[in-house]
Length: 207
Image (cartoon, rainbow, N blue to C red; front, side):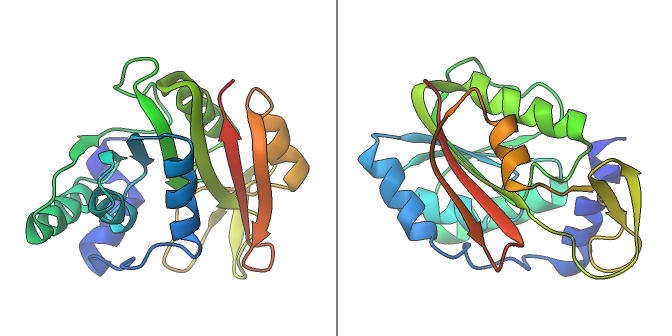
């Protein structure tokens, strides 16, 4: 599948910059990054830029990676409108990331890495580990339960909606125990359930 064939590119083509606001408690994560001395942040799955823009406004050195050329185009336009700079990369998170080992002091990824089969999710987590410096932080959120509607289960724990805005996008659904297991190589600093259990969030540090 070429990047331009990905369902997210079709979503951004039809919906534009439809995620304008950062996720709830975003400012808390910004403060955590500051408190831990994180300065170079990778926004993994930056989409149309809602978090990347805010991080750039907070004077972090920001890198954005996404599989959607349209999403990156929207981000680039937004950066230009705000007079901001960031490095943007078109790539697939399910494959080795185009960054050197220990390139970042922080990684932010919200509602992104679960959009894959479990092998792809694990690859993304391994790559988050690899590109972080020792002591670097990752704040990651994933799906904790499936939405209502028709779906097909393509492997244990991974479904593909047959209707709705995210039709055709795989969703690996996590339990707290499963997410902790996948992040077992990290030091888990915080774990929380959000949006009535729909979202699981983990704050992890690379030892």
